[in-house]
Image 1 (cartoon, rainbow over the protein chains, first blue to last red):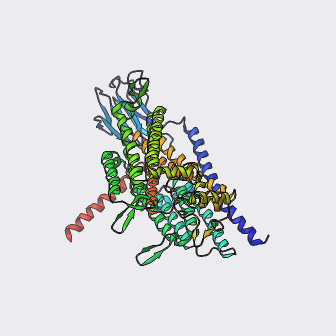
Image 2: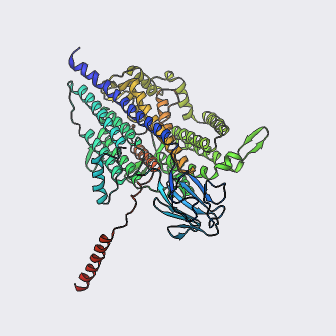
Image 3: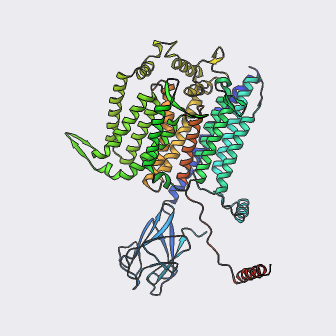
Length: 146
Length: 486
């Protein structure tokens, strides 16, 4: 068998094998995604940093990990309990939907405030925005400090 | 990925200053590199066989194609959309294989006049691929909301049916099927477009009525049926499929529409019984059509025994089977297969319906399986996008779009292999054909748009310090004085 026939054979087999190389790269990417998914499963989506709380429950400086749906209020059944005298029993809802965080007032007596403005119904908020519930002021932060 | 790379950070900062927010796609770039190497090796293998020595020949077509892939990649990076990074290279590899195959086939199969130039099969396919990929990129980059699809679902459905009627009335018959619509100098196959419109409508309809469909029941004797008013669309769908077979004589499209519909219905309701009812309806309809129409009988008879009429009806199917046999496991190599009868290839529809047979002959079972594997990659990505979607409509839309490509590939590959009766649909991204490439490009573009996780969140704003503020104020005052004086 001469050199040309041999190299032609190598070329055509190489062509098909390179398609399989594509699969290997794809599979590696999927495997990495899977590992990252497992590692990231327990990580909170974001956190609330308590900036100010005159009554000290929760204390200023506390960092609260957030799930996709968080209920805030004075009642002990809320996922985030704010034991402040100006907070209603079921005060507000903080949710992550698709791409953005939303804060929703649940008919509280003293209202929910976003960056100093009263929230009517539902309002989107971004990282760095400040939410005030009762006398407790909190800032939405990323899960990991950058 | 490598967010800490200092070069990347410097580049990012420079682009930010120019008002561009890039999102680097290293994974896509790596896959595109593999695609480029693979296609180049394929091209060299083809040219070497043709010239009898190791040569690359005139690789202008390949170069144009690879540059186009690179340009689209850069466009994705610069616009900063956080989309799936695997779909585009996969479509790129499929279309690249198509370019190789079309370039290898006899160039006089299709010749079209474009502005005084005669474009044979290979360059013509490249033009269609480029148009299809431009559509893909445009949709992926510019579609930021699905409201226009979601809100007008009945309008879309009406447009689809209008399109269908238009073909029924004005369509011209090509190759025994009334599929092609001529409008002025343009001609196209609306059934390709219709499949996307259908998926949009079904996704909207099922997302709205999902709860009712999956919980309510009507009892008829011992059978538990879905609530009757919601069953009507299913029957309507069945009717449309039958009408397509009867009037258009397009078995492939009817089969595709019905299977995609059943798939979506199952995904939306999680009730296997519906699929069972659908299959029963399908069998009843199929039997009815078989009894009533000769062209359906022909297809089934060829499928069961192609050797009954080897020089007539069964000719193509038998030739395709021989091609699979000649290919074997490793294939004959690009350029070495497909003996032709006189000047025409032995399988007349080798560039459209039987392109899978051509691939199996020249790239062997190994290559044919690889091509099927690429469709599996598309399925994996599409269903993953559906699973991660924010709401029902997006999930169903992504599922439907994925099914449209994958089921179509399965139907035609099965037809080539005589697993299913042969029906005339294209092998997505590989068969020659403008309508098919444009629509499949749009489908992948929509999937990419659906997979977008939003533009990267802007860095938190920093309040300028006192000195900067004073400088800004001074500049504003200065500007006003300048204006007043001039």
